[in-house]
Length: 216
Image 1 (cartoon, rainbow, N blue to C red):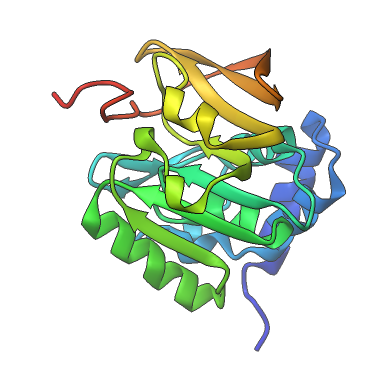
Image 2 (image 1 turned 90 degrees about the vertical axis):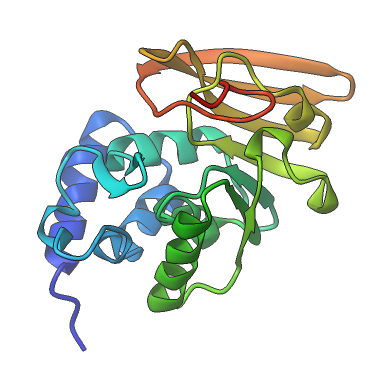
């Protein structure tokens, strides 16, 4: 059965992502393959490929396609990588990661949101993502070490448990800053040393938890 959104998805990749400088072909292919309209609330399918974030309920959002692509590209994934994602949301970002990496563990603190993400993965036919309900700022040591860790909510500083769960040569990408504006950073582990790079400004919902922002 032909996907009615295939043309929009290709236009999204060409107009919103490729033309803004994202050149990692694995990321571009994943964005063309994953049906973003399956990861937005019912009734919002027509808005799924717009150049902006969308609300998914419970105070959460699905990120703008361009930002999903940029953060994925910064992780520099290879097919053998195991990935930890902090903040599953509707599952769209995890779905993109799952098209490139071997496996993804995604932590979501809101039970209802986690269950919806699992249903979205089922609809999309994705089987290499495991959703864990818990405090993402503490990571998930049972699956460590991870080749890549992606944080999809804004933290005041990089949660220390995530650093200890990163494999040698592994990368963390996260939005770090205050609750109004952050910068994307990438931290690469080389033995006991951590190299930090800073990239473009972004704006994400706050990362709540023991090593993030406190619950209001």
